[in-house]
Image (tube, rainbow, N blue to C red; front, side, top):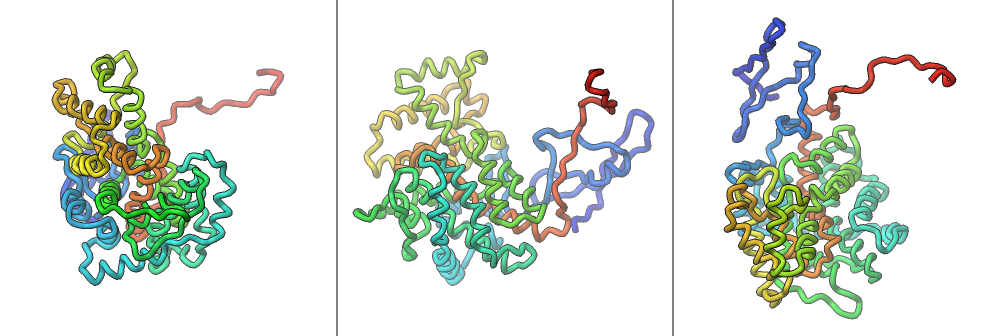
Length: 433
């Protein structure tokens, strides 16, 4: 239970008695005013579209300082985690609160690798989709369907069930994403290979075939691992809030993660890297950049610069710095530095970092700009970009869901509203309307 010795006083201009409300301090970040008793005391709600000034929960998992351009997982800067560890190390941290030692890391890797297969009947489930179905629609359906196959871990009040479900979701998501891709291109599904790392295993399931195995490239595997680490969690964003809201009703974890995937699908959220790459393809060539920049600066043109700036970060996105390095490493490894689309992307990046219009508005390239380029270089189709995002974010969703379930203060989510419709009316006979 959070306690406080400091108060905020809300006064009213209509002469009503002032109301004192507790102020709580976090370990870092803004203080919050506890308004839970506001309605009971005054008969009024607060009004906050988009929840821009509302803390819906307390959390110890991820912290963002948008002004400083800082992202912490359990107190560790994202730059250090991405540079010094692999994705499963960050998974362990997000789930358990501490980084694993050598023994814990080995046990965790083993546990995840032994849960990567999905029930064999899932392949028949896939066949119910059209071949050209969007991968995110397939993932919403297949992840939700996991609850039909794993009845032995659906009791959300059982800590062991929660642990098993967490591992199953993290382990099986790459398999489902790869299956969605293979189904879309008409190739047979590829089973996981336990001796490979998490990211190497995924790339093999994506790109190998029965007639030709996928040669694991450490540079490319490391690039994917960084993408996954950088997208693993991001505080109380739209999809995470969706998972928490679904979970607050007591829904099983597979249903909650399916709800998060559905929210992530939106172009304003997980679809941003896909939108950034589409923008580059529309620009077409370096010669067209000046005209494109002119249109971006024209408020009446309706042209938007995708992959630049961020709703939370008012400084350089800390994830973008690492993704930029990774981008150049991958392009050099694959000999794509002179590819027209990548040359276009780098030219646009240079202008955005130097042009006063973008610099003064802090429209720096964000992680979506670079991750889209990297994924394209890795051979991942654009339609699957958000699926990769979902694969990474699953661990964050699961960690947040587990934290919410164990929070004694958590209640079923029930936002209020400011009603502006018609007041009470009387139904007239139909002939009199």
